Length: 293
Image (cartoon, rainbow, N blue to C red):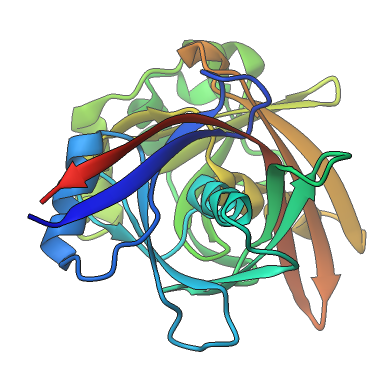
């Protein structure tokens, strides 16, 4: 019976049991797609990653990312956490991870002794915007009043830097009381996403210089996410697109309502007519073990 080692890390935190937990299978060579999906469902985390040899030997690794129900083209906290784990295992310099959405560059943060303490990733794609969503539909999904959805800067809109999210600005009070309505998510998926199982809603408030966020994706098994790197990277790029600035820096807090406080540091920059973004934060090891499959 093959044995596959794994570790777990908490991502976007400097304290164990904060941030977003991630399982990383450090050598998934020989594993089938079905086995990866089954292990991700068994782990029951928002995502689980599987490290494989790179297709291009110039890159550090190929990484497959699965949520509870499907493979992801790209995800933020899995890329940050996987880069951190690779650095712990001796990888140095700028790491390059092959994911379906492209190549993710990882700059590892280290302490004074050179030990990895976190990472910053560059999203694999520039900002792309999709369709606007009805305020009423978004409010219903989040269980809030339509009047709490703010549209002065932008309407709820699909945004991606490698994987898509519906991003909506809401009042701080509404953010705190939001709770996903599964029936409304299904109705919105049928209307806007042709019944797709993955409809991810990223809400944020921006008051008194603070940005707070919550992300709900109940159709793919994540009722709420503690720290969503790819959604916040898209948010940073979206916020920059609303200005004439060449670059911006942001810090987002997420996970507070879940008891898993998270801090994500973001940048966005205009380059060659596109907007690129990064997201980073700390990582803390938690578990290590083996899977028998």
